[in-house]
Each structure stands twice: as C-alpha cells, then as structure tokens.
Length: 243
Ligand code: URA
Image (cartoon, rainbow, N blue to C red):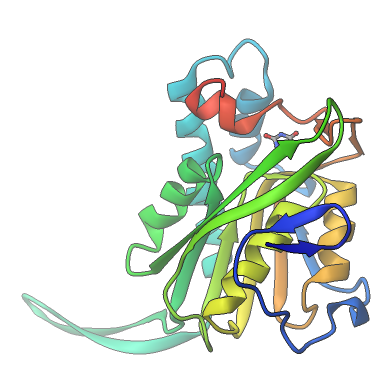
C-alpha cells in the first residue's frame, strides 16, 4: 500500500510517472456544455430533479444519453482518416476517426455513462478502475483504488469518464493507476456534473497540453462531505441503490 498525498490512498503497485504534474498551469482546455442550450439540458435537469431522479431506470438512461451526446462532441476533436467504402451500388469516401480509443471508467457510477460513450465508440478498447471513499469518521475519507483492468495505453486516446467531478481526487488517482499501462497521447476527461474545485484540481494535476476536460455543468461548491452543491446527490446510489 502506498500513501499518496497525505489523505489519498492508492492500493496498487504504483510507480510515479516521470512528468511533474505540479508544473501545469491553469490553461487546460475546459469545455462546459452548460454554456449553450441543447437537449442535453433536459437530461441534466432530470438527473438533478429530486422527484425524477428516484426512477433508477430513467436516471441510468439519462446518464447514458448524456454519454452519447458527449461522445458525439468528443468525436469532433479526434483525428480523421479518409476511408473508401463500397456500397452495393458503387463506392464513396468518408472520413472516419483514426485514433485508437480506450474508454476508461471509474466504478460504479461511471457505468451508465460508459455505456453511452460505448454506444458510439463501439470499436474502442475499454478500461475499468474502482475508486471508493473509505470513511475514517463522518467527514474524513480516503480514496481507495483497488482494481484496474486496462489494455496498453501508450500513444492511444484515453477517454476517462466519471459522472461526478467533486474534488477531482478519484479521477486523478484512477488516471495515475491507468498510467501503469502506458502513457496516452491524448486524454479526454468527461464528467457530467463538476464542482469548480474539481475543475481547478484537474487543471492543476493533469498534463495540460494533452488533456481536455468536458463537463455538462459546473457547480460552485462542495459540502463538508465533498458532495457537489447543488449537484444531484450520490450518483452511484441513484444508479444502483444504496450501499
Ligand atoms: N460523488 C457523487 O455521487 N456525488 C457527489 O456530489 C460527489 C461525488
């Protein structure tokens, strides 16, 4: 077990990467979908709404739909290559993504969002990381990473999805765990609801040149339990029931 910054714990055979992430300045590309109107807002409204979010099936499906929309937007940033396609009546050319994509997800709340991305990036490889909060008392907790399954990442495009970006620590520890499988050429971090503190943390800790952060909404605060305010509550519980 390696203690990783005073409060956060990574339970993996972990070697720090060579880069010094503390060198990063806050000029990473951050895309906040909330700044423009689209049907995405309807899905965000429903997952936040205390009366609608209780319907687990709808909650999961809304996260999946948000993942589908985000996947389309992320796809616009990829590199494309021209491909010839033969139809029954002739042939044509079309640009298709050329990047090798690995879609990574943080258990467990990330699963419906992962499914949404996977519906569109159906040719991608997949990676999974478990991160959970182990409470030391009512307020203080460590983030534990205990499980990671990923293909090789060197030179690939990592799309790492986690619906709630609160402090940013789970996402960062998940990323550090994934680096055991190589260094991706590009990283797209996709969260549905982010806290400003989480956005700031990600901008500080991830490699700025190769990372883009996508958020469907950015909320102002965290409460003393590091839940996002106004947020939506516990995304994992809303997806799959209380622990
Ligand atoms: N995880 C959640 O599910 N909700 C939050 O507000 C923060 C982290």
